[in-house]
Image 1 (tube, rainbow, N blue to C red):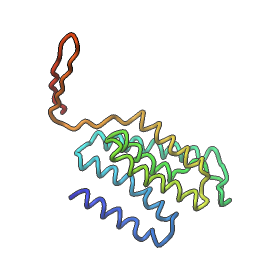
Image 2 (cartoon, rainbow, N blue to C red):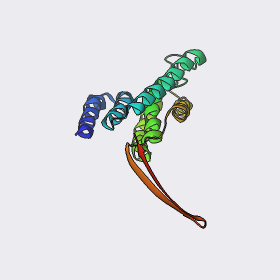
Image 3 (cartoon, rainbow, N blue to C red):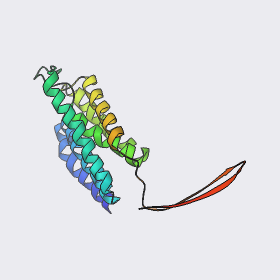
Image 4 (cartoon, one colour):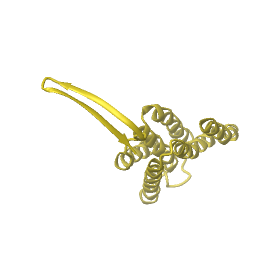
Length: 175
């Protein structure tokens, strides 16, 4: 039920954007990605994951925003000097990397596809160079590796090991 609601919210968020072009759609997807990642954490009742997502996203976007105001590189469309790095791409790649690191490739791969579209939309609109987007993805990767832990669902875990010297049975419960 919650997954269906998240899909409907994403569709509703991006439908008006589709009429506005690829840049607007990319921005809508960038805004939707952290909301969807947060929704997945809430659906899994994963408060730790929600906190890690928040820290990852704030660190990634904050770094991009700070560097954008320090580096002062001209945009490809010559509109201003805030090209490097892309904070919109940072907003998209932070939850994508979080989902990969926390819940696995099954969540991360679709999120990375969406984040890559956001990066493409920024380059296509001549708002960023390819390396602006790549830097933002790199920041997201680095911060997620620092702050994100692997999700372990609560419940009973068991396993067995055999060796030439004997064997072992392991039983544990994750809270």
